[in-house]
Length: 136
Image (cartoon, rainbow, N blue to C red):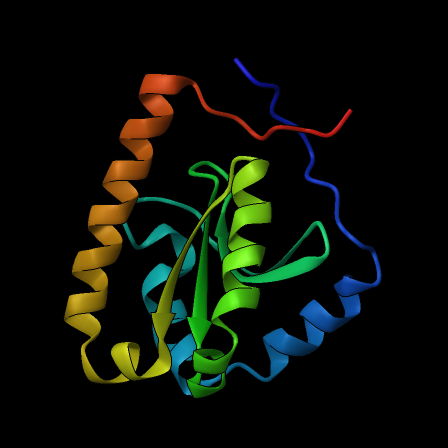
């Protein structure tokens, strides 16, 4: 079993994460209304979590699961987003993505997909005992 511990992050991102919390997008606000206070499946999510050199829009430490809410500008950043997800995956964090338009226009579909992803992730963690892989 891999060790679980504190995930290293660039301390300079703390201030940026705080700023991001103050200026969330309408889609982030809508999704946060569903995730906050352990309302969704009983899992605790936090907003704007610094991890390594990134800031995840939402993060659940129990599931090692990040959620990113992407605007239209991310359509041109697929390679960057894929690299970012790969780096996080290397330390055990799975990232799922939703576009603003999905959240704004099909919140029930988003909730359904998110519940499916959460159940798969919990099953994976239960089977493998998967934990954060800390750099030595």
